[in-house]
Length: 305
Length: 139
Image (cartoon, rainbow over the protein chains, first blue to last red):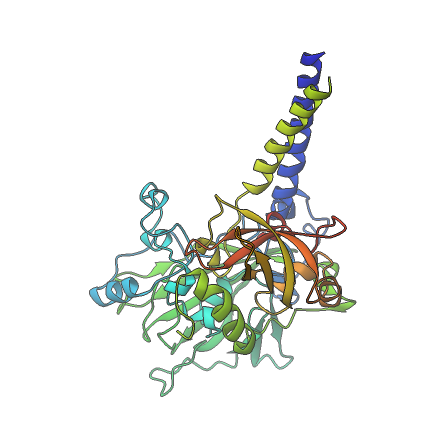
């Protein structure tokens, strides 16, 4: 009788563990790849980038990246930095990745240093925490939905981002990026053109306070960023990027290939309303409440800092 | 026979509890690193404030410490888009959590020792789960 009870218990544990794993797997977005999409093999026009694209494990946002979509870092393979680049790198204190000074951080030398020095946000200096702009390329690395809106004249494309409700204009009227802009932009100055089936965006003139990614890799105001978007099937948009910033990195820095999935209407409808959410980071909410009342105490930091 | 069932059930529950709470989640805004996920705690709480706000919802609540004194807690919740995606609209969430609502809250408290934490699970007086459990938040 006792043996039967333990056998029953064992079977129950197996059942529950498979349910938990399935739930976790689905939740972590492996469901996005595990269930083959019925629309992925539909015909498509590679010059049509319309639709709402996301690297999110769910549709809406706030989650991790979808399986096979690439993580939120630019690349684990970082070129050597210049002395100035290194100094700025060390001054940045991110909250993502493995915790600074822990055995877990020490045991993973295959991970770039930036990914192994996280501190509680109250002790860090990530400008995005207090609703400052993400800039580029950090904004396209964030796994929230985004959309390209191509104008009918072919003179410009607007790329909109759900995260913090931002947008940027990419001019396709043949102009070049300014060589020495008077004012640097948080999102740079961008021009775009088609290279076969790849939409290429060249940008320059960036405010140097933003981070390349959430691991706190810096860039200077001399950064040139090239993004190459290619729709590879009906549901998938690939992105690879190159940063050329000799003031910070001794060689061009090429990103890992990132993937976006085309969201279906039902994945991005809420309360009967289809479209991206208005995900504004308003200091009156995020700074005055979340940072002051949760983040700072949790980080052992006095409020008002 | 009764004791055997109790033992088996107890072991089963412990195993499931460990499995559910040990599913790792990646951090949103990197705040996860502030909390002690190895030592979650559960308290009987009374809501003082609930904010359905971007990019982090928050719940503020009172709970008694070991000496019976009221302590004011701040709780981090997930991004509203996660809640909306799971059917927890602003209206529904706010209806469930007005000030004065009694709850059982499980959280990972701040490593700093401050009365702040990330909320892992909320159970209302009827025994129903409110909002998303941490393992479902996937931030």
